[in-house]
Image 1 (cartoon, one colour):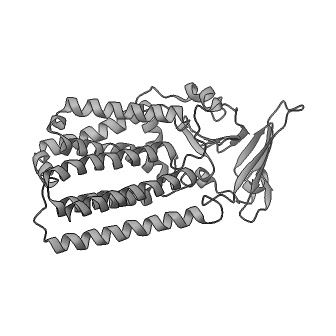
Image 2 (cartoon, rainbow, N blue to C red; image 1 turned 90 degrees about the vertical axis):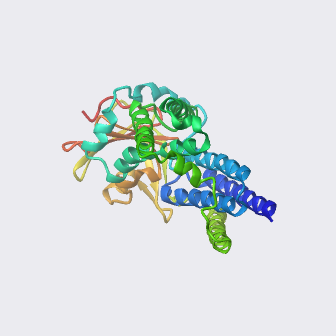
Image 3 (cartoon, rainbow, N blue to C red; image 1 turned 30 degrees about the vertical axis):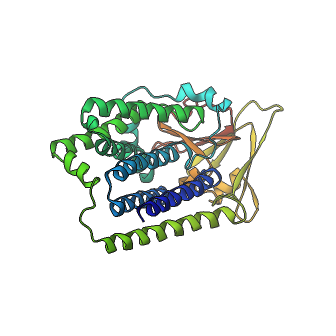
Length: 359
């Protein structure tokens, strides 16, 4: 019976990861719910945990901790490289051209910007709180994985390697920019968590918690396993339904079409809109709405067909600094000024580079 439970656990995990991977490739580059994916991986981890306490063998407990680590790494890579990043690509030339100019080596510069500048609260939450708690689960898993990781030195070594690995993946897949504040928040958050656990003398109790069956009645364990399994299968089915409906992506019907203007284009075209100016640099931009109706960029903005607070539906947000938000996709670049006196928007082709237009 124990062997069957372990096999069932692996089948559920393998099938779910395959479905998630397919969904990730085809669907998660659009505006997606981080909470949904977190819930999915929490359920998978809970399935591993309940299987472990049902089998109740030290060998399985040790194997399960490795499974938690694998699930965490898959989720971490998904959140930092793929999800809501519309234009990730292997060594994208345009990305590499602007990469060095958008690196931040000044400590707390980005953190201060998010905390005190006029930035959407959801962006603040994702970039400050998200980065702060991102590696806390890893610190926790290292604690229960091996006693050697109960020291600051070993924790810092692994955490630093992981953050460097994330930055490298983002670089080669054109999915983000190097920012020293990411290191500060990621490693700082994990170290704060580790310090609290260590000072509260919770390391051994936590390790014991994941190496025992908690004296839960066997029938209760089976009921929990059935409930969790059904929840995972339902989410798998929902992912599959999304994958098989006509067209991938929630916003696949809406997109920007860009036509470069090569003849006699020397100056930006300036268009006055409500409360800000739109500057268009040598491109014609059309926006296809939900009903396949085409708008000029001016019409779409003037009539509020495009929601400026949710541009991450269509673009990769590559920078929040110096009072400007920079958006990119495969064909278009947009700089949105974000100061009290300047809300202007600058639009150009994929090679357009920000040159302090908002200052």
